[in-house]
Length: 256
Image (cartoon, rainbow, N blue to C red; front, top):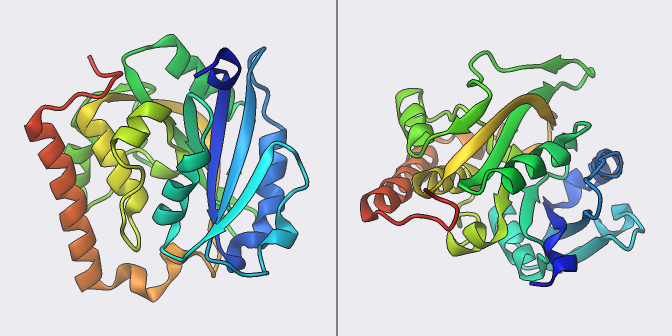
């Protein structure tokens, strides 16, 4: 990987027609980021499907790449986008969410400054339809997230992780080694988070890094997402993968 490519952070966004109108606000939040000298970003927008409904909302910017593919859910779309990820770090940004000021710079500061950290997350505020924001009451302390801590918390708290997978920024090589996002209809990002934590230490920043939009069309708000049978199956495979990685003793390239 050349020096020019190495000093790039890749933003990966899965999008489908209902969420496409929010791309403009995601783009504004990305353009507002201030990166360290010599760094740039590349935004990979991958449509989960092939329609004519998303392209009109894609910003006209040479730093933005838009592609389409067979529908398979957001995890499949993000993983397909990895074929074109040309930077040392990959940051997830859902189409309907927004980065806060300084989010990318904080991620880079940790991942560049602490070699044993494989991934970084940050505090999230829910962005409500009326514009109000709501935080989470049990955010962890600022600093390292030890290996296995996310799985332990997730199992003990009704399958709810203490850090939000929608804020992940990951070392490219580690993300690829784990196969990207899980091939699940939902919880694919939680599956990745638990797998990352099984093989590498992470980091949590108490500075707000993401506004997580709550709206009637979001996938996690639909009835199938909370169907008990499907949810139980998703949680079973997500947990089994993380436990298997831990038991096998594999360590990521950034693990101590």
